[in-house]
Image 1 (cartoon, one colour):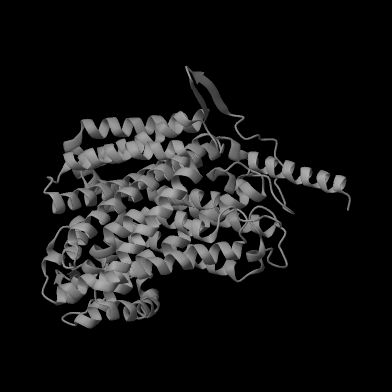
Image 2: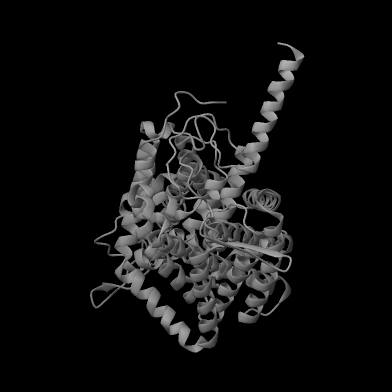
Length: 563
């Protein structure tokens, strides 16, 4: 080949790379795009206010933005009336619709497993020749930190301890109704069985089911954006069901519900993170706990999150996520070494086995006798994960281009699930071991404090507790900035790179919603809004499952893995 010809080909490749860098939605290889006259951003309002530019969907941004502003305003004004209202709301939703949340989550798990083992798993996101944009390490770090970070820190000790102690206490009856919180039938007086059942119940809430919820929505978003050529918004998934109507009010409503669910789901996690960071600061430095401290933490960390938002996805979220995952791994390694090492390492496999054995009973949506557990824990969790799914699902979709459906589902389901199981095993086993050795205060402490009480039973308490606070704060930041990017994409009609002031708006109001919920009822208010936001989006996600299958059936499939 002549030098001149090589130079021409090299130039073509450079132009191709530049073209794809400017528009990451352009597919590589064969796809079956949807023919539509709709152009991304055609319904957007584009304006400039001084030096700041705006580019947002005229109806979606306006309605969702005004709804959030009204919620913050009313909750802050009527703080005394808010708490009983939130309590009643949470109790009614989890008490009457627990079967719906549990059944829906089961459907998402079954769908993911079926797709893995069918020919549809050979569809590649982004086209038959697409390559991944991120390494496995960067990919796993981002999806794990965004999907579970604050929750693992908050519940890593407190949930295994809660299920263990309630199971150990056995069942109690009052007027023919169980009043205990033990999972399934409990394990009265049997320490080994209570540990086994407690860990199985904990893993149930952190393994396949939540990640299947995320995976279904993420798969739909990636498929219809990268392969079908539609905007990266929730409404695009519904094209097989609604056709061109997704550009009208049916689509507007879907995206508005997604924004509200995402923001309230995020606010729940940010509120939990603030409560735990405040507990840690009180534990280490005697800083008073309470609403004022938590509000100040939300304000400070939201300000830091704004800096990360301005830095963008790769510069901000990826670097913070990877740094925090390294710090979390070091803390976990420390606990393994100085804690009950043998019990932790053997317990990992024993806990997995217990989870598999108890999974059918734990996932049963009807005829449950352990109503406090299934409603107060499982129904809340599934609603919370579903409320989070627009945020985590879109975030995972944005970083998963180039993966096959099978590779995507196996990775999103299995790898984070195993990581969650190992994390819960390390911290849960250590806490239960301390409890059985006589440290009863670990169970009687408030939930946000239990991590630090556990660390107090190990060497270098001050250092490890400080690391724990840093982890909570950085997980807070990565969740906030990732959520802002996602909400901004939906409210901008699917534009991936919307103007910076809009991201600042959403990041700011995530913090304000968390503050209003903290002042309007604390943990109860946070849980109530997570469940309330999760209910309508559960219906959306069930319909999306049908559309995803229809979309995959029309896509070309690869015959071999492209390296």
